[in-house]
Length: 217
Image (cartoon, rainbow, N blue to C red; front, side):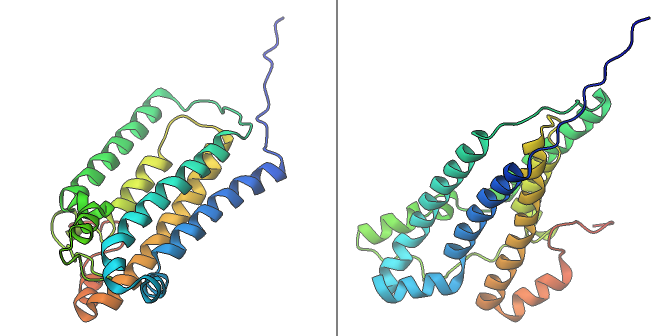
């Protein structure tokens, strides 16, 4: 009689888990350090407020792309192990959630000036001699998907990262750490917006949840 041979799921070695967490938390630390308002203000005292307003956002974007690429390369270089795929109907539901997250993120970007978001508009204004964006200035958006949650881009990231139906050991670890970072990033962004907009943003926080939409909205 034929016996079915079960293939045990390999648990990653502790050093590999530590490497994955160190890479991601290193990325999060660098990213958050340069996103912090006090870091931006300190750099402004060195390069001047006008240069800060014109060049900081683009520099931050370039740095973000570089450290994201470095972290992705380090993670993809580690050995990995595929896990059994979920049942087809579960995989289908997960893909739908990912698609909804991508659409939600795209709707959030529709409310944002993309060239300003990555810093090109400010840099062009600075290089051309025109007055760039006020240092520390950020748009306060409360319409569209921003009336559903305060951080729709973070929610979109959680939906896309967490609900991938392609399971591997490394991807599950990275997804868990990424979700923690998205929640942490939401708290940092709330603090930055409170510092800038004060009571106006505090009232917005009272009426609109951070990540999880309220039922009935």
